[in-house]
Image (tube, rainbow, N blue to C red):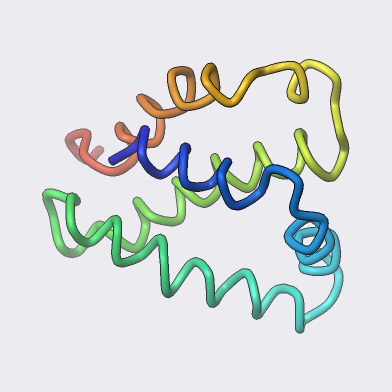
Length: 109
């Protein structure tokens, strides 16, 4: 699931100026934040619910996945940091997929 989420994220965000704009606006304006919250609620929460070993933990685990993916969005698409931009579409799921998977399914603290 972690690799699939990273791949899906990249498919949506690559070349999407609209999503980048929503990310920028979401940091400072309520309407943008609400749009990002809807994506979290409608896409990430259901994915986490499917694989999370503890039903009570899936919201927190989904939030950790969101932090990972939105951090990538910020560095790659908004700030356009060269090292983040240079990672290929093939490399990113291989590098981030295990981390996202760990957030979803690793034993809790």
